[in-house]
Image 1 (tube, rainbow, N blue to C red):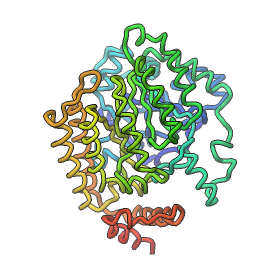
Image 2 (cartoon, rainbow, N blue to C red; image 1 turned 90 degrees about the horizontal axis):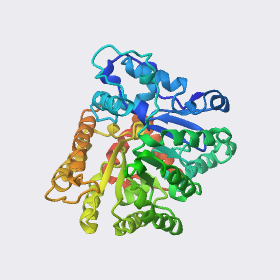
Image 3 (cartoon, one colour; image 1 turned 90 degrees about the vertical axis):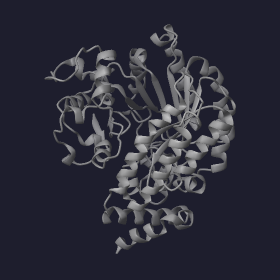
Length: 466
């Protein structure tokens, strides 16, 4: 077992106290990369490679109760920060809202799900197996492979075959290093996964398919069908409760692929709540630049095809990975969300996320004056999406759409704070300028023509290249 692409250096490994370190995701949120035989807990830390020896020695415990993850949970209980959690550490150090759940949610999870009657205000027995094991995940994220038809700027060959092709073309990786040619997951990995899935199915609230791009992956539909079959015998099914299936898609699959996916939704929505999320955080040509290969018209057309179904258990939202280049058109995307709600009379959701790595695409590299874009986003959400009088549409389980957007406001405010308080980092700006120049040369694009509002910033960044 080894940690792949580890996080930042041990500068982050320090004792900060239980309240500042604890996060339930280390117990409840596994992310499984089926094709590579890798996993992590939470969607932020580096992947752990699982070997055939691990599987033979540990069985299903290799997936969520291996020695490495046991130690990381012990860190949390001892109030230690670990480099794996560098994304949330960096964001919190800048006053930006992270995805770390905090003490209250951890305590509720331990009390209600795990069955440990403790408020964790006193001494903690860090050797208690009930506290170290993770046998009741409520979120499971699955990646079937890195098959993808886009090359998003903040992505990498790890998550996109299109990125792989480009990296091979320009000599940055060998063909035999690509996931399609490299050594696949250990032979026992998938059989052990299904055995483990059957054991943890009763605690799941949400199953998320990430990419690559699920809707163009040949394994997606068979995998989904097997999950559906296993979940028929789950406690949730016996109690008449629906588990949520999330599919995160770039909404740019070829017509026959996307239509086949849409054809499945009516039957699936009878057994699950489906939440289909469109990856995207920018608008129009800016989105096409950030997400190379994206056809904006196809993107919006496929979104409208989904919403036009008006299926009662199917929700739609945007999966926003906020980065340095999207902030100037985020307000337009939020306006699109509001327009879609009114046009189709259904709620449009969101999920906030921030690009921290690569650091030269993080939003807080921008000059302080660009924080005004986030201020406008905050004002628009407050007036048009978080106001019940202007946003009356309800989610399937009677949660007001306006309430969901109201929870987005602190995130936008913290992001505004993070940019407005940031200090210029010449080394990071140099890497930004080098990346944009290389990107424009390789992809035959022109940054300044797409982002004229960032021309002075780009000129400033280029000045550090010497």
